[in-house]
Image (cartoon, rainbow, N blue to C red; front, top):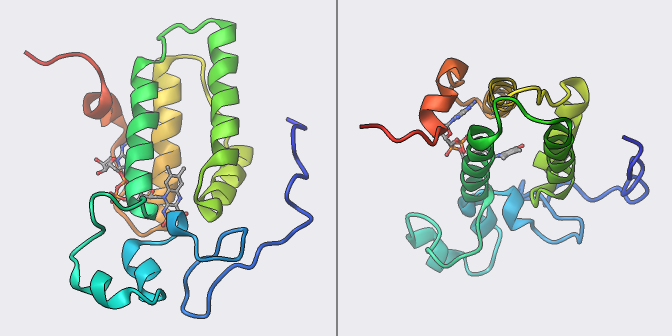
Length: 165
Ligand code: FAD
């Protein structure tokens, strides 16, 4: 838990562009931290982008595409996590989540998620436990963004790997 606790604290990144766009640690607009619409609103190639209904398929992901794909991966990992994990499997998933929260490309998302994980430690005693912990974590982000919360009794139905007849 002491790993890298102070890393990055020395250089406080600039937070926002005058147009409300979140900047990356390099001081440039951060694509993974903004929606396609807000990212393109500040760029010079706005005219082309403004005409498009959404990001072209071959564009790097914005904060929403990245988020959707990531939640799919995380909940799918929960769905294949063992019902009765060994101590090693439990420590692996905790390490994975800790590193995930450090490396997530949207740094503002990552910071909030790291804070959340400090308040609500990863629960990994069983598939049920981890799946519910993750569902609650996702709901916390939903609340922050003003999105509806998800009924966590249904997470396995949504992401489980059992094939329906
Ligand atoms: P998503 O939230 O991406 O969800 C995808 C699908 O998962 C939903 O359609 C629904 O079927 C299902 N679902 C919804 N809630 C749950 C749940 N609780 N449990 C199980 N399944 C569920 N975006 C920001 O703008 N700011 C942030 O700070 C931010 N932080 C993030 C932190 C993390 C760790 C991640 C992975 C993403 C974060 N995002 C953030 C992205 C954000 O959560 C959404 O992914 C993005 O806004 C797209 O939302 P969406 O409406 O498509 O649904």
